[in-house]
Length: 454
Image (cartoon, rainbow, N blue to C red; front, side, top):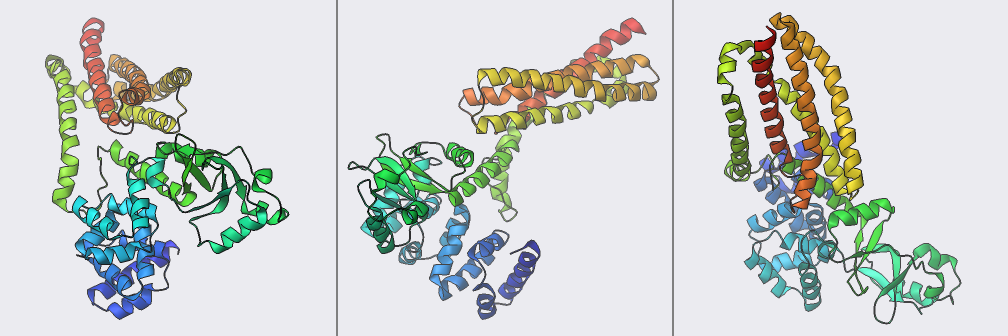
């Protein structure tokens, strides 16, 4: 559904919810794709989401399950909690949802509710869910699906086709994985190969033995990188003995990429959790305030640098008007951070690449500093009528740009070495460095050069 159609649908849904016209609401949404309904739910207020979900659930539980699967897990959990669904009703809903999606939702539910749900699920489903929950969050094992095709390497093409026909539809219907007697992954066969080869052919004779796979503890970002690098639509997950445990499909990878991108953007702003326009103000305050305290500390450090030159500022107050140029430098540093965070996410950083990146960013900084510095120098001379001010501004921009390039390149790497997320917080410390060093240069050079050359 295109954007204009979604806007019209959103307005209509809001109108029917306000009017409590639930039969019209169902008639409007029953033929709409679950992904489009989920996209609209994301923009509704919590009470509106619940009303819409109840209408869908009461008319078609399978469609409700599809919608829940398309929602972000935190929103899905919020709907389930605020709907006051009894555990039996939640279990009935979960019967129509894949185990990996169930795990994502259970992660967001209060522990007592999650435990009650697991007790009421079938033994087989409980075993699948517990197995996925046993792996750390954001790892391949935690997000994989245990619903896939896998057969022995001695199986014939004819028997493989029959097995696929008899089995219920698998989430990963792209490949047939081949395992040995111990359950270890030894190859993969595409469905196209099954059709094109004689019925008596054994899988071990046509399978591709060079299988791209990941282990259960592989970080989900690395999984996404491999799927992208090798143009896969699914990737198998094995344990450390090589036994096939699950599969991750490309739709799950897209969710991972979106999730990681959103997390990185939020972390750059100092937020560890998703904050929506529908989030209650008190909750948003609790999310945002801690990092603002860190900002307050870094601002105090910068203020202390300025206080060192209060005499210079009093004597040459006009120079203080050019303090905002450090903001320009800060933006240049953020550009360097963005490049390094991406390289770190892709696993493409080594000592050699770091040296090259540092040299490149310094050269870029010098080039930008000269181009911008000439303009700022001319502006400083015109505004103050003193050529020496123009020279000072040029030198400040040049020195601060180099510091921004060095800090923007190295801070994310130092964060990674320290076991921290490179996307979380570097911008704040970069700003402290560029502002502090910029003000030190501006007023320091003013104190030295104006006194000697004027």
